Amino acid sequence: MSRSDLFLRDGRVLPKELFHLSFSRSGGPGGQHANKTETKVDLRLDLAAAEAVLGPVDVARIREALQNRLDADGMLCVTASEHRSQFQNYDAALERMRNLLASALVRKKRRIGTKPTRGSQRRRLDEKRQRGDIKKGRQDRPRSE
Image (tube, rainbow, N blue to C red):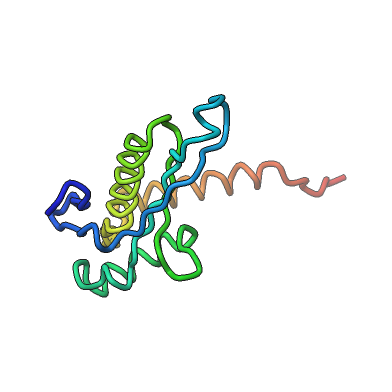
């Protein structure tokens, strides 16, 4: 395990071989430094290869939850360009990838349906009856002459 392996919060480790890394020039202000250095980091995770570490169920969950971040090849993409240093942007991209994967792998708790209590049923029906009485009181009654 090297420094650039990605350690997930659940203890699993994605080796650096699963990632494709590229650098480009970052936009925005910065003068001469920004015009000649490639500090923007584009980090891509090969989900097909990551299936060996994560398992097919978790990869399917990631594909579904993060489908808008997948490229045409089915790789999960993250970019970082907020820092002036390539190294800091690389760390930021790794952290962003870690957070994305952690949020996609959270299993939602299934809701267990419960019956309303007898008291809440009674209160609901009493309230409905009261509203009906109020509306009945608003009706025009035929006048007897």
